[in-house]
Length: 271
Image (cartoon, rainbow, N blue to C red; front, side, top):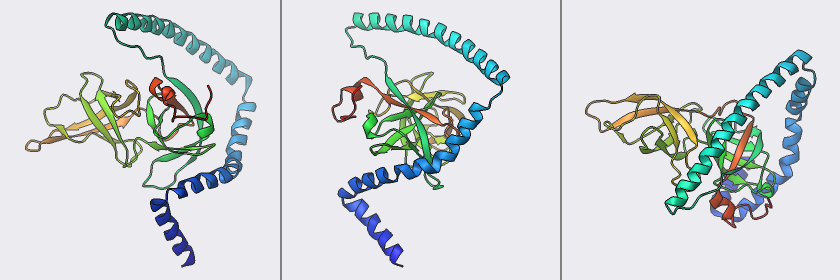
């Protein structure tokens, strides 16, 4: 009974008193070494697995990485040319050009086991320039955004969380809509799309840049189902995230130009 009363009091204080956020950040800093200790078996196991790989596996992996690096370098040359051409066209139109986004690699420290939440903890925090609302990606697509920042860690809300909404647009025709989380790790919903909306199964959804949190043009999900029921005003549209939300270990924290120029974002960070 005493524990229940203390828990209820802490919940009410967390909702009503802004000072509790500073206390929570302090306690998170104190428990960070415990998180590292709890995660040490995984780190040691990963190190042992990488250390005792056979020579044949290492040779094959090295060859594959070399081939992949060659392909990426060839693609990068074309991207450099396209970026230069884009700069020239923007100059002709009298528009300003934004430099490429800056990213930082972070690693997952913990996963929220609450079945009603889709949240993870990463090992970069305020001391690394991380800020609330920051976009988080994996190697394939958008994963979510930072909702809580501590000195050494940050909590990330995944795009599939039931409380998350992400402005997107259809890459094929520019149709704008909202991708809502469903609480299921492999499903998003696109509500309030009219039955006659030009959207099809297989369409790629990318960030629209609206809302100010996610830079424009990053892939989000692919439409997997479109149900148009006669007599109903809206279609039921479902999409599957492109990011590997259930098995990714490393993530990318993204700074766009506006975030880098914002003095409140990552004030303690020096590039």
